[in-house]
Length: 387
Image (cartoon, rainbow, N blue to C red; front, side, top):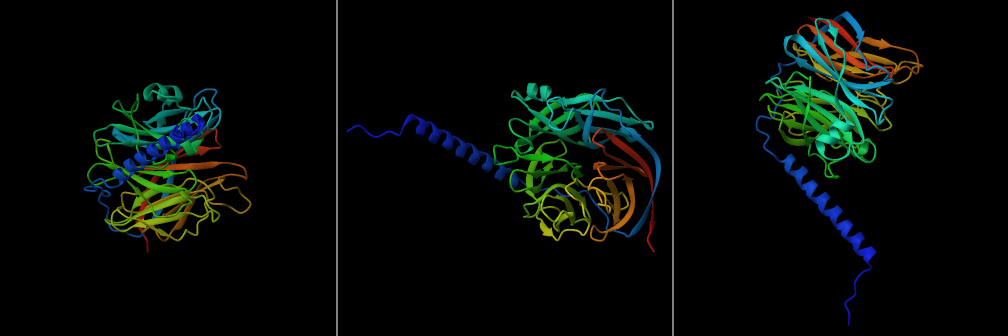
C-alpha cells in the first residue's frame, strides 16, 4: 500500500510553519543569550546623592534649525555632543511620516548658530548598506563615545508599519559628517522586528552606555540595551512587567537607584514609571505619576549638580495634548515641581518629542515645532539650594 502523503499545498504550509517556528525559536534564543550576558561594569556613571535645589532658567537664544528646502514635515529630534561645546542635532524630515522620501538629517551647533543641514541616512543608503530593501526610516537617537565616535541609531522598516521596525546602528568618526552602517541590533524574538528608539542614551561607569528602547507590536513595553565603550551591544533588560508603556527615558538618581518614565499607551494617559534599586539590573513598576501626558514622548535629564528635569506635554484646560511643552524639576525623581512652560500654543498646535542636553551651565532643548521643523532653545541654568 502506498504511504499517505499530505497534499503538496499542505506540505508547503507545514514547511513554512516549521520554518517560521524555527526562525522565531532561534531568534528568541539569541534574545535570551543577550539577556544573560555578563553584567560586569554595566552600571550608571557615578552620581551623587540628590540635593534639593531650585532651578532658574534664563533664555539665551531661540531658533529654528535649518530645514531642507521644499520638505514640509519634520519630527523626532535628538542631540549629541562634540568637542568644544559643540552639538549635533538629528531628526527625520520628508513629505509626511512614513513617506518614502523621509531622510534623517543633521545640523551642527557651533559659535551660537546652527549649520546648514545634511543627509546622514535614507531608505536608499540603508538598503544599499544592508543588502535588502528598507521601506521607511524614522526616529534617530545619538550618542558620542569617549573616543569621539558618534553612534547613531535609526529606526528602519521593511514591510509593514512601525511595528515591523528594526534598529540600525551607524557610526561616524568624522564628527557626524558621514556615517557608516555597523549592524542591525539583535533584539526581538519576533524576527528581530518591532523594536524602536526615541530617547537619549545614558552614560555607564565603564565608558559604555544604555540605549533606551521599546517593543511595540501588540503589548508595548520598555527595555534597555547596554553597550561597551566601543559600541558593541552587551545585553537587553526589560523595564518592569507592564504592557502599555513605551518610549522610556532613563535617569540615574543615586549610585544604586535608576528611574524610568514612559509614555502611556493605555487609557490612563499619565506618565508611567518604574524603578531599579540595583543599578539597572532588575526593575519594578511604580504607580503612574499624577502628571498628564497624553500619548507623547517625554525627556528627562539629570543635571551635573544632581537636579532632575523633565519635559512633558502638559494638557492645559481647553488645549490639545501637544500644544503646551512644560518643564518640571525634582531632587529625587519622586516629587516634582513645575518650572515653566517652554512653549505654549493654541488647541491644535504641536510642540512635542523634546530632547535635552547640558553643556556646562547651559541647557539646550530641541523639539518638534508644528510638525514643520525643529525648534531649539538655549538657556543659562542657575541652581540654588532650596530653603
